[in-house]
Length: 121
Image (cartoon, rainbow, N blue to C red):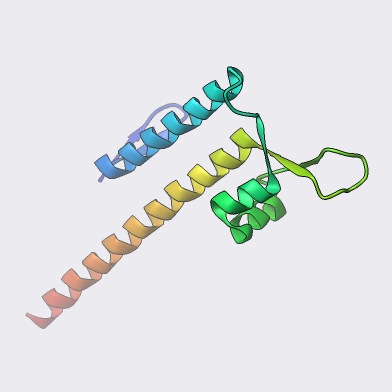
């Protein structure tokens, strides 16, 4: 596995990782364009976020400060909004990190199997 390093970015040079990264960037760009042209609202309700990514993940992102909640009214009436680009980028980043962790764990298991096989021969 090679690593490409530029002045301000490092990317693992592996086809599946690069493909996932490019797909994530394309998806975020498409969302930004739809918001800019009025095809999508620039926010979503908290309940919509729960439906898309699950209550546990959304609440964790809010607690960690990755996603901010905006109340529509000065009095808390239950209507809460989340910036669409913000939450979608957090979700994509989590997917990319989870995929990389899975690949790293798989690689470690394969290395352990090779070492174990060498020890028995």
